[in-house]
Amino acid sequence: MFEGLFGFFKSGGLFMIPIGLCSVVSLAFILERSFALRRARIIPASLRDIALYHPAGEPTTQLTRAVERSSSTLGRLIRVCLEHLPWPKNENVEAVQTRARIELVGLERGLVVLEIITGIAPLLGLLGTVSGLITIFSNIGATGLGTQGLVIAQGIAEALNTTVAGLVVAIPSLIAYTYFTKKVESMMVEMESTCMDLVTKLYTEPDEEKK
Figure 1 (tube, rainbow, N blue to C red):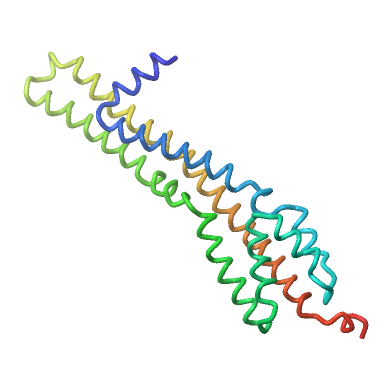
Figure 2: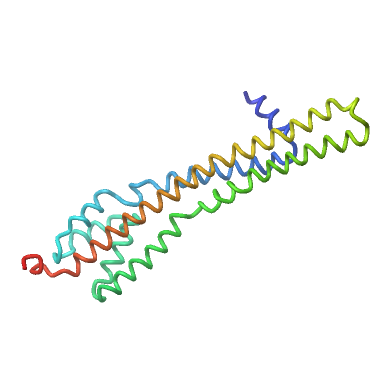
């Protein structure tokens, strides 16, 4: 199997090197984002439940303790909310939203690399195809068609192998980019909803629920 892969890589020519590098980088970022974007690291269920079921207008002692023990993204957003409680409600909301934008940048880290690889891997494959065809026709033009069977076969192999390799790298990268992008978007919406609900309850007097 390894000999077959090596032969496939070798016959693809020079452009297989950057395509191979793209595949390594893509795999590294896919693995890293798979670990970094685990739900338990972003939205711990225990912290989310404490925020969702926090009684309106009640002291924030339990919530503060839960936030202090958490290093999650949701925990940092709730911490901002609690730190700005002396501020007016609308200014607190703006502070949380500002922090959410900063957290979003962190969650999307590396996704732009997958997006770039999705675009350039097929182009590198296309360059390999063009290079293979140039090899074929330049040799045919120089020495004629009759004696160039091996060169023609090598050129066709280079053209086809680089095209296949570029697509093999680009397709998983595109799938991973789309999946991670939608996952980040979904989690950000959930965290924003949780935080806005919490802010409303924190600025609600206990007696107001009874009126």
